Length: 310
Image 1 (cartoon, rainbow, N blue to C red):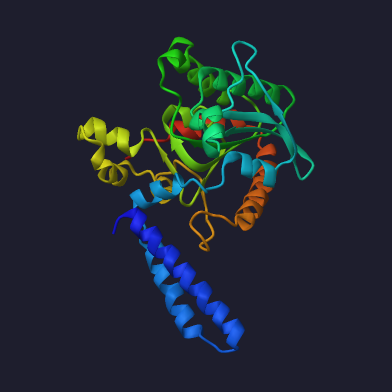
Image 2 (cartoon, rainbow, N blue to C red):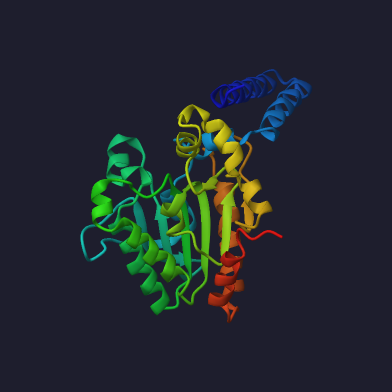
C-alpha cells in the first residue's frame, strides 16, 4: 500500500471511530468492541510504517512548523532580523525569549503556510544571509551566556546561483565552526525535514532531539535516487537505504532522544501534548547542561565519534 493510501485509510478509520462514538453517546449504547477493533487496525498500520511513509509525514503540510513550536513553548519571544550585510532571510527565524523565566536564544527553519507565506519563507530553504543572521545571533547568545534552542525543518539550503554567488557554502561552514566554539548549552530539535548542510548549519548541539516522524539526512531521497539510480522514482528505495528515520539515527547515536508523537492524528492537528512534553525536556536539559564545565570539548567529542564503527 502506498503512503497516501495508508493515510487515507487511517483517516477513514478515524472518521468511523468518531461516528461510532457519537452513536454511542446519542443512543446510550456500548459499541466498545467495534471501536477497539478499529483502534487496533489503526495501531497495526502505525506500527508498520516504512521510511518512505515517515518522509510523507515529515513533509505533511499540516505538521507543526518552527513558528508553532516557538509560539507554544517560548515565552515573550522577540524576533531579530537581518544579517547586517545583505538582507533579512525569513526562511530562518532568530531571536530571544524565555522558557520558565530562563532567557534562551532561538533559531528555526520556517517553511511557511499558504502560497504567499511559503514564497516569503522560500519554503524553508535559507540563503547565505539567513545563515549569517543565525551566526550573528549565536555570537550574541555566547556573549550573554544564553542557552540556544534550534528547530530544524528544511529540505536543505537554497541551491540557487545567487545564493552560491553570495557565499552559501562559506556561510554554512562559518556556522558549523561557531557552533563548536560557543560556550553555552545548545539543544537541537529536528521537527520535520533535516536536509543536508542546510539543516546541519543549525544542527550542531550538545543534545539532539528528533520527533518520531521527522527525517534527517545528508540528501533527500529524491536527490539520492537521482544520483544513484538516475531516476527520482526510486526515492522509496533510497529512503530505506539512507537510514533517515529517528529510530535508525538513534541506533547509531546521531541523535540522543526520540520525542514520541501523538497517535490521535498523523497531521498532529492537536499538538498541545507534544509541546508540553518538549518544553519539559528543554527545561530539564538546559539545567543539566549548564552544570557542565566542559561543554565545548564534549560537543566536539560527540560529533567526532559519529561514523566510527569497530
